[in-house]
Length: 396
Image (tube, rainbow, N blue to C red; front, side, top):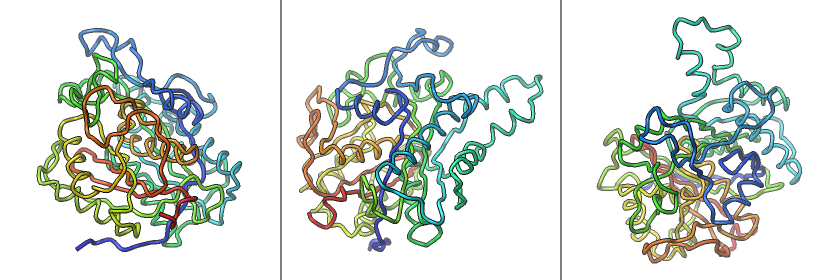
C-alpha cells in the first residue's frame, strides 16, 4: 500500500538560472529550444585526462563581484536574486514567513580547494567564514529581509526534488508561507569529473548528442555540467509557472552506486508520488526523466515508464542539452519544465538514434496534463514530483 497521502499543492512563482548557457533564465530557455547543447570543448583538464580539452557544460565567469569571491557564491546569489525578482514581476508578494532550502552536495569546491589545498598556508577568518554553507544563504536572506527557516538538503542527484518537497512540507505544515529553493553545483573540475569517467557513467571525449543519448541506442553516459538554479515556492498562486501537486522519496538501501535491479523502491516512489499528488497514473501526460544516458538508469526508467505509465504521451530528458549538473540536476530540469509550461512547448533534445517509441524528438507542443519528474541519485536516492501548469490544474 502507498505510504503517501494527498496534500495541498503549492506554486512555483519565480525562476532564476545560471547554467552553461549563461547567467540568466532567458539564456537557459533560448539555449535549450535551439537543440544545441550547452557543453563545449573546455581546456584545463590535462592534469587528469589524456587531452587538455574535454566536453563539459561549465558556468562561464560572471556575476556580481559583491556576491562573493567564488563562482559558487556568485551563482548562488545571482540565481536566487533573479528568481525573487522574476516572481515579483509576475505578481508574487512575499508572505509573512519566507524561508530557504538549499540543495547542495559538494559545496563550494573552489573555496574548499583554496582553503585546504595548501596546508602550510594559514587561512584568514574571512576565507573560513566564506567557506561556510550558511554564508551565501545568510546574504540572500539579509538582502531581502526574509526571516523564515533556512536549511540545506543533500540527496545526491535527487537533491533538487528533495528541496522542493521540503519547501512544500514547510508550507503545508505552516512553518513558512513561501520558500526560496536554490540548488547549486559548481564542481566541474578535473578531480570531480575523472572518477565519473572511470566509473563508466560520464563521457568527456565526444560531443553531447554523440555520447549522451537517453533512451536511445549507442548512449555511453552523461556529459558533466554545472548550474545554480533558484525557484520561489509559495502557498499562493500569484505569478505561478507551475503547481507542485505532490511527490515522494525512497531509498534502495542496496549499493553505493548501483540501482537495485528489482526497481522496487523506484516503483514505490512513483506510486507514492502519484498518491501524494492525487493523480492517477493514467492522467500523467509526460515523464520528465532523470535520463542520464547510462545503462542502469535508462533501463530502469524506461521499464517503469512502460509498466506504470502506458497511457502517457511521451518521455524526455534534458541532460543532453544542459549536462548532468549533479546536485543541481533535478532543480535545473524542473526549472526548464516551468519555463516549458509558460511557453507551451517542451524543448526536448533531438533524437539521434533509434530509441524508445514514445521518446520526444526535438521541441514539441505541450499537451495539457500533469508531468511526472523522476530523479535517481547515487546511493539509491529515488525521488519523484508531479507538476502541472496552473492553466491545466484540475482540468485533465
